[in-house]
Image (cartoon, rainbow, N blue to C red; front, side, top):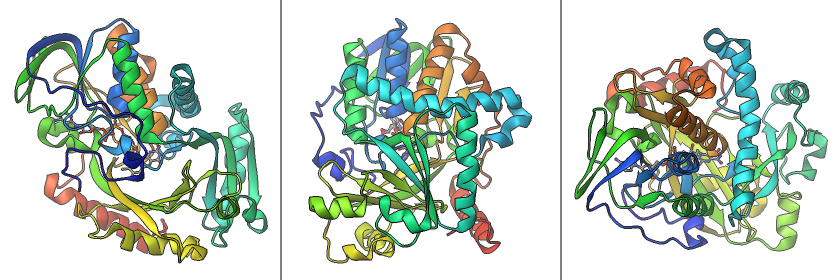
Length: 432
Ligand SMILES: Cc1cc2nc3c(=O)[nH]c(=O)nc-3n(C[C@H](O)[C@H](O)[C@H](O)COP(=O)(O)OP(=O)(O)OC[C@H]3O[C@@H](n4cnc5c(N)ncnc54)[C@H](O)[C@@H]3O)c2cc1C
């Protein structure tokens, strides 16, 4: 499934807007910047660079949106990483304040891009964070207060256990925190729409053009099978799919599988009963459950975080019991789509953004750790600022948070992390 060069056979592919096939790179070309990777990071970096007047070539190994960007849960949720306050020792309190603000502004940036360019991607506002335990629900009160201190203007609302039917027809939760400033959308249609925006700005996009080799220098040579791009700057936007192209970066990200099923369309009554306010919802476990309704009223239910590198043989058989634990009333509802994708996990769950020390004209952003829809767009802006202006405060702050390499190299890093997570679970520090 992961190796096909066509989009995953997902609900998103079945309902995608136009997907024009771009040419394969078959010439030697020059540009100010070459971007590798046609997901949210790459496409939005290309947009931001072109808006600043730079010429850009984007190379995608398969299709635009083939990776995580075209197959994710579609949850557009505020925040960056997990708890940025722990990074004060690297970036100071001011830096932490910047990241907290950026976690909010990045959602607004996605909303603006959609609105400004009229991208048709089923955007709906409203999200509910779900507490699995009373302690987690108690923490939501502090989170709501903190948001108010940050000057967060969208409505937020605590929902105690006894009132949960207002947001979700399930008895498993200890409460929720509704946030009307986050939401959900059709991610493949978003990235396809953004690629059209990039092209309208003059970005040249090539598909089915895997980059095979980088020859570093003042002008980087980016070699594909039947053509080369020479550029003053290079952006690596390959996330969990970077592999051996730049091993010093791929060793810092662990590709982990996450899986989604889509039911048949529910009736209007059923859908309104299940998720009355059409919110996106997500719980607090490590291999978390995340779900929402699609525009045609299917339940899109995602979850799991597989470090083993092995996908379940039958994703529907693996995911359906998880869905039925939350929604036993869907026992007779058919599953019509099933797919998976690779999340790029980092050791501190914070994205890695910066430039290579040994090759300062090579920039990168990766490792959003399962929370990338808003953050990719923000990081794309920082990369463009850094390349265009030579500096960017945001880029500098992100790069000061250490990027840890997973021990064990390519073969051992998955089992070692899986063991680490098991250890935490056994000590009761994280839910399973
Ligand atoms: C199942 C799943 C559910 C998720 N749900 C959510 C969610 O609900 N909300 C949220 O915020 N985040 C979610 N995420 C995370 C989010 O999707 C990612 O953080 C984000 O899409 C990363 O975008 P990207 O552009 O960096 O990488 P990708 O979208 O993975 O794109 C990388 C691209 O690089 C290309 N590439 C790799 N190597 C080469 C090469 N050598 N030459 C040319 N091209 C190359 C690949 O083909 C790929 O298209 C989810 C992820 C998954 C997998």
